[in-house]
Length: 411
Image 1 (cartoon, rainbow, N blue to C red):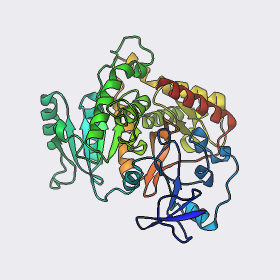
Image 2 (cartoon, helix red, strand yellow):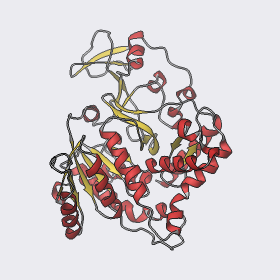
Image 3 (tube, rainbow, N blue to C red):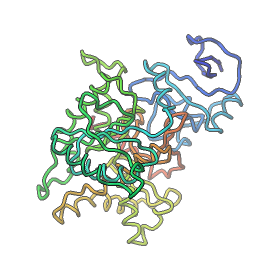
Image 4 (tube, helix red, strand yellow):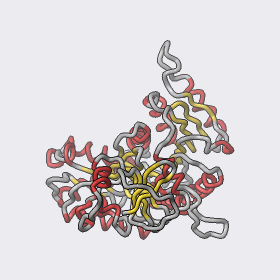
């Protein structure tokens, strides 16, 4: 094991002769890696020693016991992992120092910008206004329609607790030239939503071709603005759009990947929250699914490929697949009633998960995992993004691998 000093922090590594000052052995706060920077996270909290020796990332990271034998590590490194104090950083990535800074954002309430105030955006905005006073200082809204911006600025400005007029976040217009002057950018823009009664079965994927150029345009703008905050994707299909944004922002003028755009940790997709809530909805109404309420999990995308597990400890494949089908098609039941199913996604996937994120709590969102954006339970920590690890049954892991393959084939 080799030790280095980096900006006052002690780093350990299996890599010798790195271009950093050598240091005496001790309890490190960093562990230096050298991995493919296009398909792996740049910095993350280490929760298992096998994450330090794996060749790459994939869904097996959700169950480290599937990653092979644990490596032999010095006691001081193992104790740092056990204490949750070790950050792994991929020094091959050209912006690894910025990744470390992203792990440790400034304290205090955050500035949130919302791009597009349509059905989803306006519902999300209302929820953030009412629920976000503890962690959101202000919300800027941007939309092509100036009247829409004026309407929602006025509407939100007229929502206040009596005699406590500063308790809720202020909502104000933001111009496109200041769109990235914030801590969180919520991408809720959409170009095409199949109308109710169109007969389109997978509405989310029908939107991909239309929404991909949109998210790529704003991802390139984030690169040009040197955006250092969270790029939150709420538009459908959430997970492929996350990858599209990441790839587009990291392309140079000649189309080559250069890693100078958004970090993988900066891009998260917010679509899994409502799928988790829908699973709970059905579990409350059918005792066969009741185990989900205390033992279940949701994984994967907001749409086809979703994996609902009725229970992690007592996984039942047939029961879980039945519950998954109910959750995946729940939006169609709202469409059958003649309405667009946007309220629950805007609140459960958008507002609630963003607030949990800003508070540093566990939440449901899609994170970079082996070059795809995969929905998991995760949280932001001072050591980087931490994804939940579980002991997964073979049948459940097989479903996760199939979903991972499907996502990789989209983009």
